[in-house]
Each structure stands twice: as C-alpha cells, then as structure tokens.
Figure (cartoon, each protein chain N blue to C red):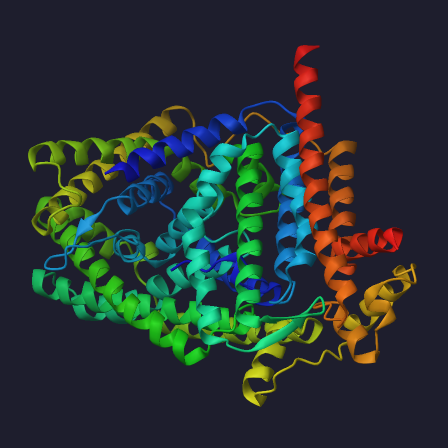
Amino acid sequence: MPNIVNAIYNIRQFDELARQDSLIHRLHPLAKLLATLGYTVVLVSYDKYATIALLPFLFFPVFMAAAGRIPAGPLLKRLLYIEPMIICVGLLNPLFDRGTTSILGQTMSSGWLIFISIVIKGSLAVTSALLLMATTGMDGIALSLRKLKVPKIFVLQLMLTYRYISVLLEEAARAIQAYSLRAFNPKSLKREVWGPMLGQILLRTVDRAQRVYDAMCLRGFIGEYHTGKNPSPGFADYLFVAGWGTFIAASRAVNLPLWLGNILAGAVK
Amino acid sequence: MHMADALISPAVGGAMWAATAGVAAYSIKKVQDGLDQKKIPLMGVMGAFIFAAQMINFSIPGTGSSGHLGGGLILAILLGPYAGFLTMASILTIQALFFADGGLLALGSNIFNLGFFTCFLAYPLIYKKIVGKEYSAKRSMIASMVTAVVGLQMGAFGVVLETVFSGKTELPFNAFVLMMQPIHLAIGIVEGLITAAVVSFVWKARPEILEKAALNQALGSLSIKKVMIGLAVMAVFTGAVLSWFASSHPDGLEWSMFKTSGREELETTDPTHEKLAALQEKTAFLPDYGFKASGNEVQTEEQSENWPAVSGGTTVSGLVGGLMTLLLAAFMGFVINMRNKTGKKA
C-alpha cells in the first residue's frame, strides 16, 4: 500500500520546505494566511464563465513559489493528485449544459467555458494553499490561529494531531506491511481482518495517548503549547498584505489581460 | 466527496465558515466545561489515528474494489460528539493544508458536512438510540451501518446544496442529487461496516475504553433538546448571513433565479456591477479598443464579468492579453529565481 508511505513522504517534504529561509518564510505567518485567504475569496468570487480575467491571479502563486524558493516539482505533483476530482466535476458541465455563450466576441459552448473556469480556479486555489503551507509550516499556522483568537484548546489539539500523524502513519505502515508479507501482498485489507487490524492500531493509539499525557504532565503541562517563536508583524508584512491586496483588488475590478491586449492591439494599429 | 474551492462562492463559503465556527465554539466550551485534561492528548492522537486509518484500503467483499474510512462516526463513538467534532475539524484542516483536499474557503463546508451531521445528528439521534444501554454485537452493527449511511447522506446532500447555491457550475440539482446520493450510500455502507468491525474488536479486547466513552457525562452525553435549539439558532443565523451575502453579492441568487425562471442570459442590474463597468470604461483610455467601439449599454453592464463584446478585435485583445499575462507571470518567477541564485553565490 503505497498510500501510507506517500503520505509520510509528503508531510516530511513540506515540513522541510517550511523550514527553509527566504523572503517569504521570514514574513509573519498571519500576513501570509490573510493574503492567501483574501486571494482565495476574490478568486472564487468570479462568475462561472470567467477565464481570461482569472489569469492575473497566477502572479501570486508564482511570486510565493519563486521568492519562497519552493520547487515546482512537489507542488505540481500534489496538484495532479487533486486535479482528477476537479476535472470530474468540471466535465459534468459540458454534459448537462449544451447552451452557448458569447465571450470575447466568439460563440463558445458555455459548458466547456465553465469547465475551463473551474479548472483554473481549482488549480490556483489549491496551489496557493499548498504554498502557504510550504512557506509557513504548522507552527506558523498555529501561531496565526492564536493571533486570530482561535481558542487555545483547538490549536493545541490541531498541533498534537499534526505532531502524531507521522508517528501513527509509521505505525500503521508497519502493521500493514506485516500483514502484506503474510497475506501474499494483497492490495487491500480482507474483511476478516478489518476489525483486528484497525482495532489493534486503535488500542495502541489509546495507550500512546496515555503515555503522551503522562509525559506532558511530567514536563509541567498546564494547557499551554509553546513554540518558542512569537514575532510581531513588521513593515515587510504590512507591505506584503497591502501590496497583494491592491493587486488582487485591481485585477478584480479591471480585466487586466484584456486591458493589456487592447493596449497592444492599439499600439499595433 | 470534499467540497472544493473551485465550486464554492464566497457567500456560501463564508456562511458555512460561520456555521462551522459556531458549532466549534460551542463544542470547545462543552469540552472545556467537562475537561479531563487527558482528553486533549487523546483527541490529538486519535485525530492522527484516523488520518492514518484513512490511508488504508479495505477490500469490499464481492466487488473487487476497495473502500476507505471517513472516521467521523468512530470519533463520535470513542470521544463523544463535541470532542469528536473538534478532532474531525483538525483532521480536515490538516488535509486542506497539506494535501489541498478541498481548499481554504471550502474548509468550513467540509467540516460541517463531514463532522456536524455525523457527530451532532446521526450519532445522538440514531446510534445512541439503537445501541441503548446494553452493548450487543448485533445492535452495534446495525447502529453503525444506519448511522454512517444517514450521516453521509446528509453530508452528500450538503455538498449538493452548497454547490447549487454557489452557482459556479451548471449542474442541474436533480442530476447532481441522483449522482451524489447513491455513491454516498455505498460509501456509507463501507463506513458502517468498518466502524462496526473496529467497535466490536475494541469491545472484546478492551471494553473499558467504550464504557468510559459512553459513561463520560461531560463528553459523551448530549441533550437533544439543546442540540435542536442550537440548530434552530444556527439555521436562523446561517440564513441571515446567507441572505446578507446574497444581497451584496448576487452570484448564488442569480443562479437560482436563472434556474427557476429558465432565462438563458443573466442580467446584472446590481449597482456594484454598474460601478465596476463604469470604472472599466474610464480605464479604457485608448479609442481603438474593440469593446469600447462596439459597446452598447447592455454590453458595458456585462463587461465586468463576461466581457462578451461582439467584435473580432476583442478576441485578439483577450488572447494576446492573456498570453502576455502568462508570460509576465513566468518572467517574474524567472527574475526572482535568478536573483535567488546570484544571491546564493554572493
């Protein structure tokens, strides 16, 4: 079962990317979270036929990836993994919607136009969310959630889940591997072993939680989770949010590619 | 199925975020009131367990295909509805961030669809009623199946409603429902079978874990009256938020109007659209513009979204401009990359 191994690899890879140092990594986590959220909200606010007007939204992920020194490989891989679902729902549109609409002076199948729009929106939203993670890391996200007044108990819980995902993935991977070796490498778990397999891992999980709690108590746990970092936002952070905020608002108000194209066309004439 | 950013409108996404935040705040208060600090690491580690369990393929007897665990029901059974909901929320948050499942704006909807219906409706109203006070393997099996199926059916219907209200696709409501509900019937049955298998194993090996979960008044019990009152409040609140968004942002409403009236073209008479169109007209300072030359009143109104001006010049402008935008974005990435490299050398 390559699923588990892949998941472990993916999480570690993003952890490592988040630990790099770059212009983007040094920004305050909250600034990046707010910018990405604003970006996503404005991106999905376009109507279902928007295609060329969406192109300026490419600048934000490109900037984040380039200035954050995030290689394109892992991002594209993750994008390809998620894309089939977006494409599936998108493809239903040309099936159900056989009408036509007029865009840029041409008559086009409106179903296909919606499909293209969904794929562009989906890819951009997914990429920017991944970039947020790859440049900020889980500690950063937790810090910005606390700044946004999300209750401590939820943030703590989120951090603990995240912390133990790789531990439990490894444990599950070992159990599954032991099973595969004895059951002639099946692709999936047989009905008879569903309960015992998952149940065993669950029992170990509960015991582990007990040990984790004991260890936390011994170290003086009183309901706080410290990451050691508590930066305050600086000039660069305000500039980042204001700059991208302005650019995104401008692209929403004006169809930038068409505007650019018209200038070029005018210049040629 | 996860709701995706590509399919959601800001109005629906925002409303579902508000609803989810409300339920989460209530759950946090409940968990804090009856805390047992031990529960925090248990919730965290259980979340990681579900995450790992979701990666395991379970072969479905007689079909040759395999299914997966969602985990909402197991969490509700082991941790109670409040802690179960919060744990599900953190799993989905991590999935949205690391695996881009769904996306940031759709996260509120996903937590609501996959957490709320199972933990706050199906679990207390179906599972607890069927299982009752005395555990038996048969009753637990039936309860798990029915609860998982009902919970997932509601979740799937949630996805359909959210997609339809968002109006980012042209899928007819009936066809979408007919597609989603049967798929999730199958998923629900698999979920129920896996949950029942695990619960029965745990009951045989370590019954005290389930007893503790069932007896823990602070976390496990749930007054249905309170849930119903809470739901009514949430419904009113969500409705209010939705209508507020809908009036300031016509996307979702337009869609439903289009559906009910059956009109082919959407007419935007919203003042914000007019303002945007006016702004665009002002920015169109070169007279050779394809859309400006042929722009009559209706078209300027629609330019803000569709730019459907009828002229060959516009097509060229759009394509050239689009290409230029792509090139500029690539150029920006290239320049920053070059600077990174020279910076490293220096």
